[in-house]
Length: 161
Length: 341
Image 1: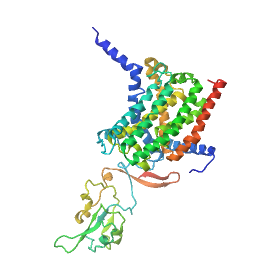
Image 2: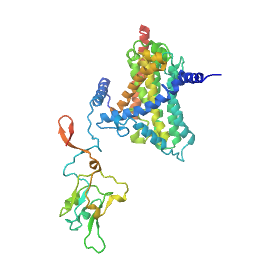
Image 3: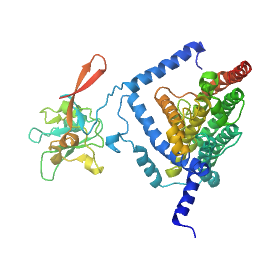
Image 4: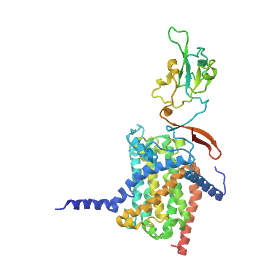
């Protein structure tokens, strides 16, 4: 139950709430961006899609072992000695353990995060495709890049880069 | 033999008569459709502005997604309407249609402009309120027919809420009837040299809150209760019937705002003489604009308030609004004895 309060106070609180709502209605303070036309430029250490360097890899298998979600898997072709990692984005939780543990920095993060798949099978990336560079669909269509700045009044502000 | 012009004149006379034009075009069916399409978009846009986001945008982008609801309606229309095997078919299918009928029907009692009243009756106010009081029954019928635990929960909530707001709504409206000395909407408008909201603000506040409760808008969307009981009585509905069920609340709200405008905001006054002389129904634009602004204010409350719990809403109904409604009756009596109206 609500505590029994003075009804004068309660009326004032109702009016305050409505006034706050009206203030935001008249002077909106939008925090989101118009996404496909504008994208926020992400920080250097953003954990997006993972990229694989074929030549640096020493096939140690540490990435597949550390993966907590079982997303990394080592693929071995017939007749080849070396196994190479592939990733399953149905499972990946973007924790970054594989990137951290890789002794030769063969795995690295990109800033791309907005890839959409039409089929579940497409989300399983074998080693051959894993080396391809990721391209953000929004940026490919010429989205405007925005930078996040701190602002005394609003908290955050998006300015064109 | 009659000429073509006579036939056209004959049809035009029927279409422009208050008995046809009122229920079908303005303020009836066509206007209701326009209201439904626009007010939900307005509601979502207002909520988005206050919650620091954009809201619907990509359906007709130059106008900020204004026909979003048309797209949603088309989607509802072409979705499969599933009738579960366990439902009681007659109430399940009939209740949304009856509810739609009874939410539009009260609007015929609203006087649009002087001399232009779809259904002219000396008892238009109790008739209006009586017809709106049927809707809770249809909602309970939906809940019963659905044979679903969430639906029946919503139906029981509706039953509780009904007894909390209905008496309050009637008493506050009757206090205005006592003040003006008539049960007729058009005579009420004629007597409002000073708007009713100034004469008896207590009655206006009580009617306003009770009408939000009745149409199930936030902060009193207890019957739907999306967070706890899926969609309340509408849980088992899909496709066009779900669209209907969701629209009923807005149509009801439109009817109530028209009644509120007539009783408290002096209806069609100030009358736009030029438009009224062209065609009497055009004089009702003043009434429509007032009612629409009131609706916009009510849907704006969605982004200000959280939902009241059932027992809180009942407590507001019985412990706060009911005494205030009784007080407003005495206040009206005092005003009448002094001779203000």
